[in-house]
Amino acid sequence: MVRYVILCDKMNLNKASRSRQLLLDSTQALELCAKEVVTERGPLLKGYYQPRGTRCGKDNCKCNQGELHSTAVLIVVQDGKRRSYYVRPPERPEVQRRVQRYQRLRERQSEMRKLNEQAQAALDDLLDALTEPHQPQRRRTSAQTSGRRTRRRANH
Image (tube, rainbow, N blue to C red; front, side, top):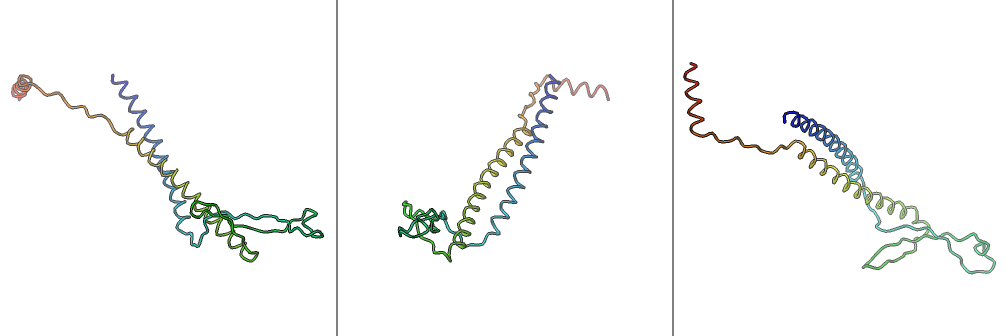
């Protein structure tokens, strides 16, 4: 019986140690993500930037030989519908940067959710490992308590 208790304590201590380490690792990664997120300054564009190639349809144009004209669109969802907007050439680099920053921020948001779930699971495991059931002591009968008193008096 004593051996079983010692083995359980060792297993719980190992579980607690692993849980602590996972909790620390998760919170440190969460902190790094949070620092990256709070340093972001807008504006951002919610949507997708898509460079495309088009043909103009003229008979003697280079696009008929395979060299397409470059164009770009911004794809957004508005009122539940997908819409594409033409992006003019001078605006393309800025639109692309804003969309990429928005997507990077969304990735960090997802990563932070996962890290938070990991930290919560590690904390739950740590609580399980460190918590032991309450084992109340048995109550003594009046005969047991009176016997103890007499023995003590006799020894003094």
